[in-house]
Each structure stands twice: as structure tokens, then as C-alpha cells.
Length: 172
Image: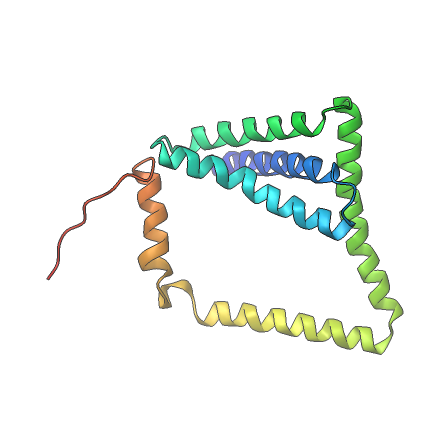
């Protein structure tokens, strides 16, 4: 059952990615990097907007979130297809996503062409990433307010199907 849930979540995430890339592909005046950034911002917006809207309406359930995100993503793709056929927009969107992969690959090619200086820069980047991973391992979230504040807020919102006020026991 867990595997099915993960597969369904991946399908929803891929749908949102396609919808956000489709919207970003319509802005031709932006560079590829700016369109990739717009895609990531739109991706977050297409997921978070329904969650907050359903939370305010006290209708926050896994099924309602899934349906709302899928409907909003479909509407975004249809909106981005205005003036063209869906097939043409699909081709444009897949081309946009492919250009993001090509951009990452071009960075690898550029790095390899820079010789030792490029290798040194990548080594510094990988070292910084390894340091951040080490810090996350050494200082897990229970050592700060994440568990006591943020995680409980999410838990209450899910448990109560929204952002309703909850009563907590009074302590002195």
C-alpha cells in the first residue's frame, strides 16, 4: 500500500512539473535559467495554493489535496495552451524540460573544459554539500524547535482537516 501511495505521489508531482514547465515555457523573453527558476516557483505554487485554500476551508484531506492539485495542474496546462493545440503545447513543454537537462549537462561539459581550476571549484562545492549533510546528521531536527513547533502545526492541520483553532491544556 505504501508503494502505491508513493507511486501516486510521484505521478501527481510529475503532473505538477509538466504544468509548471508548460506555464514557464510561454514566457519566451526569459532565459533558460530564469524559466527553470519560474518552473520551480510555479511547481511549489501549484502544490501549496490548494493546500492552504483547503486548510482555510477546513477541507484538508489527502484525497481533496490530490484532486485539487491535479485539477489546478490541468487548468494551468490548458491555460498555457491558449492559442496553440494541446499537442503543440505538450511538445513545447517536453522541449522545455529537455532544455533544463541540457543546461545541467552543459555545466558538466563546461566544468570539464576548465581543467584543474574547474575541478577545484567542483571539489569545493562537493565539500560544502558534504559539510551541510554532516551538520544535518549531527544536529537532527529534534535539537531545535522543528519538532516542537512546526511539525506539530502540520500534524494538527492534517488531523483537524484544516486550520481550525485548537484548544491546548493550560500549564502554569
